[in-house]
Amino acid sequence: MATISSDLDPIVAIATPPGRGGIGIVRLSGRAAAPVMWAVCSVGLKPRLAHFGPFVGDDGTAIDHGIALFFPGPNSYTGEDVLELQAHGGPTVLQMLLERCLAAGEPAGLRLAEPGEFTRRAFLNGKLDLLQAEAVADLIEASTEAAVRSAQAALGGQFSAKVHALVAALIGLRTEIEATLDFPEEEIEFLQNSDALEKLARIQASLADLLDRTQQGALLREGLKIVLAGRPNVGKSSLLNALAEAEVAIVTPIAGTTRDRVVEAIQIEGVALQIVDTAGLRATEDPIERLGIERSWREIAEADIILQLRDASTGDRAEDLEIAASLPDRPPRRIVMNKVDLTDGASRVEGERIYLSARTGAGVELLRREILALAGWHPGGETVFLGRARHLEGLRDARAHVDCAVSHAGDSDSALELLAEELRLAQEDLARITGEFTSDDLLGEIFGHFCIGK
Image 1 (cartoon, rainbow, N blue to C red):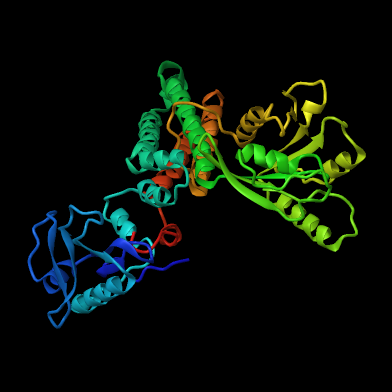
Image 2: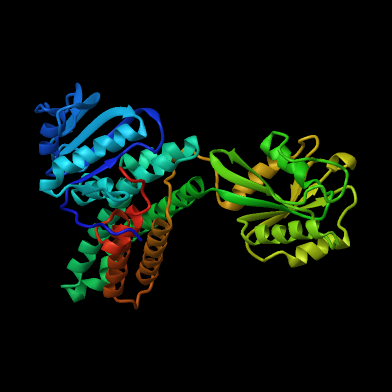
């Protein structure tokens, strides 16, 4: 876990990725921004106005010519004074410029920034809440257009607004209930005569909706690993090619052609999928094929979804049933009956079986929809949010407390104190998501996974 030296130190870092590029940026935040500006740019910069000129070394010679921007706090990304120097993107130039900033800012305690420290400053200074701060990293790492849109929604505050609205509703209902506790004679009639039950039902429904949208967003953020398993010659490689819509795997009628995994990344409705074609599962004396089969089982153990392929033209065989018995109970799996083009049957879904033809493409779209359904994805116009494990944990815990509150509200013998306590616990669970109650250890874990310079 990354540790942050001090949240009061001025910090500096190269904010662009390693390597050569047209432009490279050195970013600085904190009390050293102004003295470094005078030392490196030789002028006082007007706030938020681009200035072109030389970046000079301690001997007065130019390191480079570029654009400098100065953002006085609190009107900056971090809430502190921020200086950005946009130079040519050569690694040596940027390193020289970074070292010049460190030397010029040494009297003010300037040091190199650690991963995520600029965004951590923005959070600590109230420029972003924790959900928005995490959305910065999600936006940088987004691998699909749908993930970008969801990260932008969270960065713009939509996720936070949903959580804050739930917290406000919980506080309002708690206020009513706790005020009633001062008058015991009114407790019995309170739930009957007020609209507390309706408010509680609306909170429960809103929380369930937000959890569903966050679970879907987790799919966009993390993607899924789909493993194709089965005996040789049932069409695993052909199905990989059909899903990828490209010839990424070798297909021959010779059993055992695939001896090692073949991996292809695809998207279905913006959800990133890693499709893994594995060696055919069978008993063999070939040592190379045996190694491939061992790797197949390792891939199966790490899968999010398992698709066991069988040959529809021959029906279930003893080997298919043996493989099915050896597959783990989790994760979810489906049986794919391939080669329906060799039978009189049509592509279709029957229970846990999908009938298709990888060769003709018939039924492949049915399989795509079934994969998304297994993962919990469903189409809709509502914005989804790129859920992380801690978001889902907080929402699930809050839902559990609200469900208990509903149970207490429906029990005439249950005291209002229990109802109020469950609502308080739900409120705390939601507040942790946006960062109102967050430990330094958790902050270190979250921001330690950011890139340096952000």
